[in-house]
Image (tube, rainbow, N blue to C red):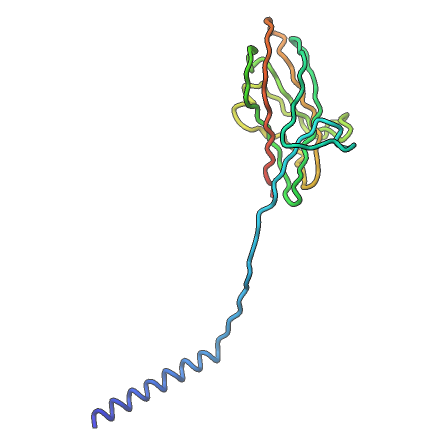
Length: 182
């Protein structure tokens, strides 16, 4: 008799659990969002010293100027930076690297000014430092930023301090970095 009561209680508990589970199944549903994929933008900064608007070639590395500069004299070079990315806007920074030669980097000032396409009118503020400062860390070239698929012309001016009294030379590189802007 006790076995029948226990068996009856087990059957009642099983039916109750099935009823709760069946009811819960009837009152719930699921939806799935599948194939979630994202990718980063393509970053691609290029440089040119030729007339970029008339088909100049943009490359990853370009040889700059080689010229004589006398104490107190300034020479200029026009260059283009192009954001070859199709989907990333860049803020541009510059840093000097690989400085060698007999002249003191503190005696050489380098300035960058964003220019209009013709290279005749400034379209942003000039950023200027001596080479010894440029080499310590990347420095923002300020506005304008270069939007994807576009280019910006810069005037680079190199000035040798008028206090330099001995002959010598200096060789330096500039590394331009495009960093994604929001």
